[in-house]
Length: 592
Image 1 (cartoon, rainbow, N blue to C red):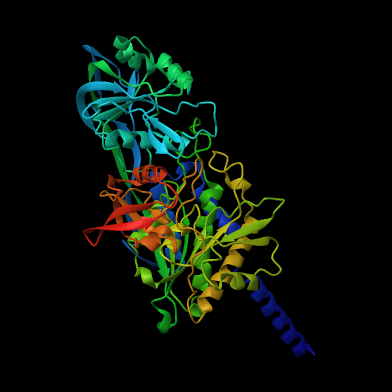
Image 2: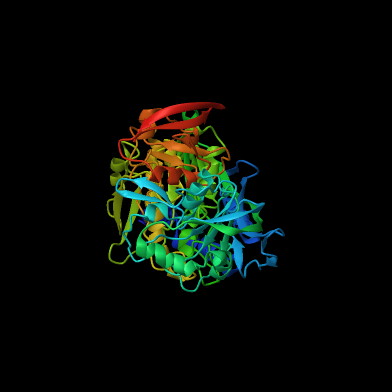
């Protein structure tokens, strides 16, 4: 009897120990990582800062403690980012012998080209040359601006109309491109009173993009513009009122020449992705990789140009949910899968991306410089903002379910008995790091628990993260990852939605159906990072990797010029697109 009791005791004890030691990811483990990454001491983990480097070393150490093998440069994949801009020493404006003050009377734009120009000035209203459908407006008609400064009003002549037909042509980059097409030597921007009474100078803030305007661009205060307009007997305000009231251009050659120079210095810093791997156990699948990733960067101290929703507030943007929560989940998934290494069929790469907030730069760099052959990466799992739950919805969204034939059914296997709902979204493109993988024809799963009012503010703090539910999301994700790993064949990729970023604000009438290089790393033109199947570009023969250098014979040097060219095209129109492919120039015809 005693022996039977002892046997039963040890059976129950073993069962109890097994039930407690399941290797499940816990809330306390996730919280530990988030508390460190979202601490005030890391100052918001802005790429290129010492604090971001501390975060990267922490993540790598956690990967190594889980038994992972570092990839790239001992676990770090370095790349450069533009972190700031500052005035150079060659910013001058001279008019009739008087020198004006930089940051007082004028300021160069952050994306100006650095140059000095002494030339006459031509006022060209709002800087439009539009001939689209019923809209006709040409501020350059009859004006020779070649080699001259052009003075241009910001905004458009319908300041009170939110649906103005001018809106697609009113952004600064588009106006600069038109001036360049007219061979202007430089652009002098003026804020009309109808747009802003205070006449504040445009802040000199980094755009997270290396692309410059190609000509000098300087923003003038209206008082300085009035000095230039003095000989014509008009002011900026009177011209603005005249154009708005008359609904027609009012351009003129001014009598004075202007000597002006612009110099802005872009400050570039190195940042790094953190990359490590777990080997699989099946030799036949050793060249089929899964990638599990999240971005670890955030907005630093916020401020203008940081993407903070409170740009006038300088404070630590801790980014506990965005995206310390996703980074913590990737760290713990690495450790959980390491404990189950004997069950892993395929190798798994774990990546913590930097510079996501600057435009998905880290994941884009990873795709352009993969640590393993890109063709071998078969699925990507992305975790971004997985720590906060809407009390009404209590759901986790998984996007990218349309990017493989098997995704929906695989998810449903593991959705039963969860304390939250799982919503499926088919589109592969999205505002996070999985987008670069989808553009490379890799099936993706994007886990997200939703946006909240603390998003991109200083109030995204650790105490607001629901670690209990986050641990359950991690367990669910682990089950899905293991299910994908167990498949004899990799997931079958299929396109699901556009490979281009959705437009916000104004809408373009046409699209090529490409995913462009948003970071501006290609200097010869606009690189195509993805082509939507059966879209106009696809049907016209454009390919991923092509560099667009002109449309209809008009130069395309970057993403801004591409968007501006596109805004002037019509549905059904056939256009010529010149591209560089394999170092040769090729012209293709594309019907929109």
